[in-house]
Length: 77
Ligand SMILES: [Zn+2]
Ligand SMILES: [Zn+2]
Image (cartoon, rainbow, N blue to C red; front, top):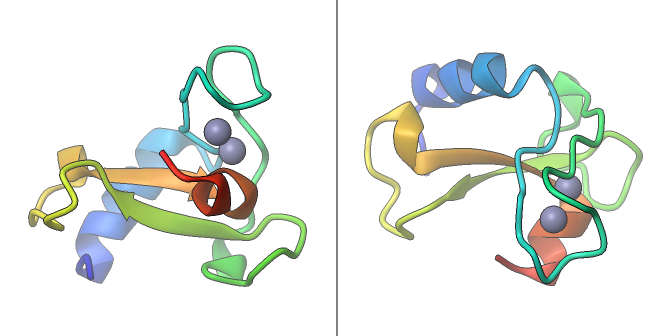
């Protein structure tokens, strides 16, 4: 898991929107779905999101942390 500080940093960078840019998903370019801070891991609710590790290793920096909406996260990267 990421520390709260790392997640906060990544969240600020994301602007509170899904950062997923997976080309195999339905959204063109960045997903940009509006997320709700309190809904972290609030599965399948509007605004629910997950802090994903780009490397899969949960490195202790915001560069490895991607803010993704629950839908994108459940489809997979
Ligand atoms: Zn998304
Ligand atoms: Zn996506």
